[in-house]
Length: 70
Image 1 (cartoon, rainbow, N blue to C red):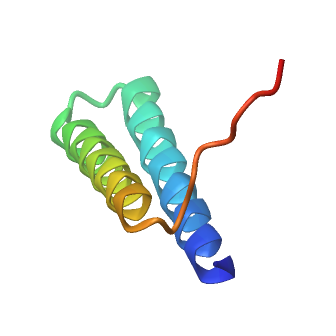
Image 2: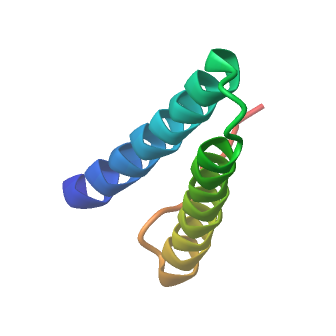
């Protein structure tokens, strides 16, 4: 499952990267909001894809939730 952890880590880094790109375009303030919108659209798409992957992996039994003992 090391490959699965690598895929999740890469997806999280890509999400953070697209958020950083959107922040950059927001703070430069050149009046071109299409680049910021594109970066945020990528972030949302990557987040939905990661959530779908995690739900699929949970249903397949590849990942299991932790249980807390009292």
